Length: 131
Image (cartoon, rainbow, N blue to C red; front, side, top):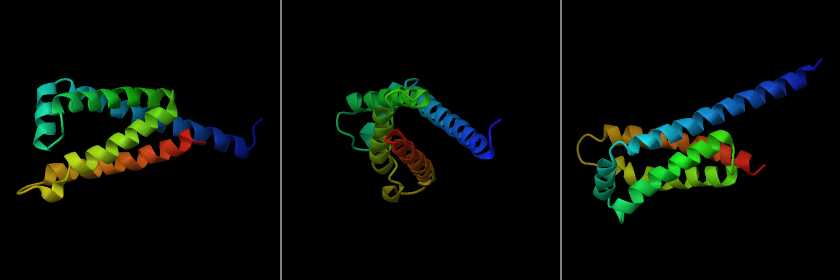
């Protein structure tokens, strides 16, 4: 019979795994949506001043799709979480810079704070990948 500390460790591992799978699949599914309207993603990147948007937008979406799946499966965790952290650090500040928007910037503000929350989660998983 397992003692309380072993039961606690099992529950903690299970919750961590569930959180990682949900986070990774959420990222992958969100990225897969970009492929439904690639021209729209390219135009959005272009409007934000992203260099070579016709290459950068599909590359970033593909990177997030693959990284999310790898993170969910916990395969190549350092590479996967590092890619997610890098993506979110760059995209959050360049694509969702609501402070530079004129007029109603509520959509960009919401996206910024959503990405900020995901960035925090990605940092936790990055730390775990280096344990």
